[in-house]
Image (cartoon, rainbow, N blue to C red; front, top):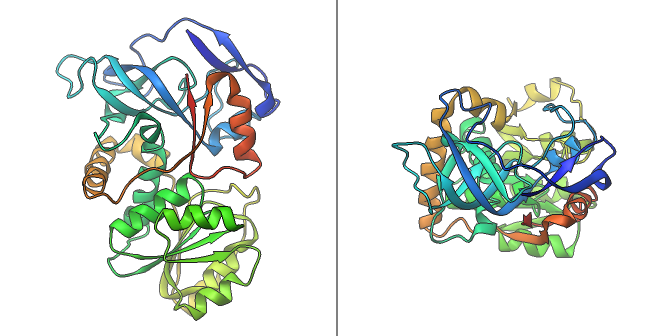
Length: 325
């Protein structure tokens, strides 16, 4: 089969298209041996793959390896007694190996793809939307009627967070860098949009402040995020696509009884596999109600995987970037 491989840690430009054997029905996360093999029709591209191409991600496979954590396509084979059958449309977390024509995933990380979504949307469903729900509800304790502020609101996690928050009855604020990204954020359901290069903190305060901030960007905006929160607000740290890891003076947390919370979805669910099924069921309800429609930005063929990673690395992506083998 064709696949994209990382052979040396030189960044996105170092990816290469190779011919390799198809994967067997095995996966290191499937301790019970129950694995789904998928004919990949779309593979999601995310910031962790950018970091992996430089050896900067916490998951450091031996070289060479095939990146790609998230796929959608058709089930080729499933374990006996599985809820999935050969020929079913499916969205799955492969963790690795997704940038290929065939991928394997643990059964507990593979889900039927709702009829309302196409395969490209399915490739942007699990990582982004499960992260969004986990960040908002499991870690952020979101309640109906609260206001959520989302940084990086035009990206994959950002648009997912806006849609899930709106579906759960929240008011939504978005922080973006330009007009194009503002349009994307509004399509995803933002009620108010603010510019990251402007006085967004003051504008958020004038608009009534936020109960919850979701931040996948990091960098130098954490202090202003804290200042934009209401009393007993929560700031959820999702990632650091901006590059730098911020620091905060903890006395700021005392003034308004504010929480700063980490949301590491991947590490959490691998130790609690039942939770991912619970989140999937909640997301299916939001899909059926029309609240979730993953926004797909760039769609590129497998041989342009380097370009896909460079698009994300340069913060030029909107919505989900997808490779189509």
